Image (tube, rainbow, N blue to C red; front, top):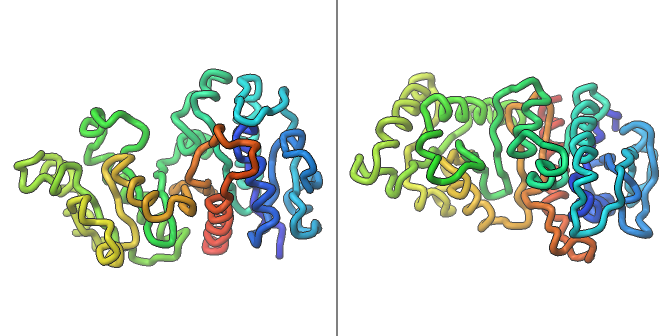
Length: 322
């Protein structure tokens, strides 16, 4: 195993469940990773060892959490986010990206953050992790994909009010999302000719214009353009018939028009095991598909399934790129 095969995990908000999940992951059968954060935020009695570089993690025994120390200004209290730590949380993400970009680590797995807390504590200027990572990468176009064994979904519009979706759902936005998605599946998942199912915006995909015109005026022109380039595309499809087992067998990814249209089916199919993947970045990034879970932080009941799945997916993506 080379040093390039070591993943780096950013700590996220230390008042959430990230620190305890990292310890649970270190005791599981997962690809080797190093945790970047303040060891003072780990649960009492945790088995951890400070390392100077990600590659040093390879010398530690299984079950020992390798830690790249990053001091925070304030102690972490489970369930009680501290604005004093907001800038350090942001700095950890940026430092982790630098490690991956330099080749010291093979990919980035991010533990959950609280966007509102970062905005209030450090004037965080981004809607979330995905947009911040895209900025750190030089402003490249990216998309958010949620993935589990049963389904991959990509929302074209993400964290905006439902009433704003039609205005943001432009031909340009849809085409860019589709191109980034297809390229990501080819590069990071080894799917040479991805089969892409595209949902309509309206009930029954607009039903020939009787329930809305976005499918006719926005979605179809983009799909027809890409079909002419040889793409395997199906749609626009009624979203209510896209996610049963028979339908899922016909595509590699479902591109949806808005946040909940994409996330409800995947969270229903695999609530604990979904992984958030950022496609389009020059480096690999995955994340568990859940938040900070302040309500259960520090109680020892947090489920590490999604974080473990994120580690495995990041390692597979890194191998695919190699």
